[in-house]
Image 1 (cartoon, one colour):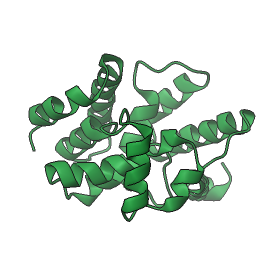
Image 2 (spheres, rainbow, N blue to C red; image 1 turned 45 degrees about the horizontal axis):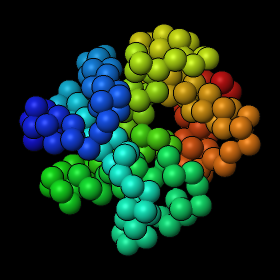
Image 3 (cartoon, rainbow, N blue to C red; image 1 turned 90 degrees about the vertical axis):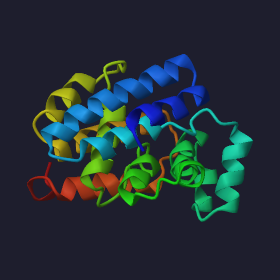
Image 4 (cartoon, one colour; image 1 turned 180 degrees about the horizontal axis):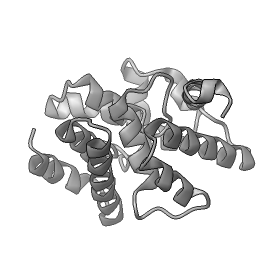
Length: 191
């Protein structure tokens, strides 16, 4: 699928703010793809579709989780996590995208997971650092993104876990698995 076509398909499903975020994630992801020698086309397509299901009604997202192969334990965590896994299903069913790299990048862009592929790390990180974001600790991650993809993902995951713990929020297990896996890959696990 061509990028222009993907943009046209996604735009009607998002508010202007969410669509603008999507375009910034795509621009950031392409920069990271070039920097880390990943397929620009696959990365950009995954970025364009990463929030495809974000603004679907919660009852629709819940139905997709209940009626498909998606893990049912998602329903025990904050609904902000649901759109990634559901989006990965929808891009296959509605647009025939069966590229597992693209689907996994969409699926795990909010939680991360252990053993993330390069495209998964790029979308996860691009969503975190895109220029429209602003929160404490972000500049440090943006700087690291130019030097070390894995370490930047580790920092983003560390910050997310810390943020959620401060809010006394539940944390999906894949995020802890991502943190542990990324930690083990850095300096022998002593980061």
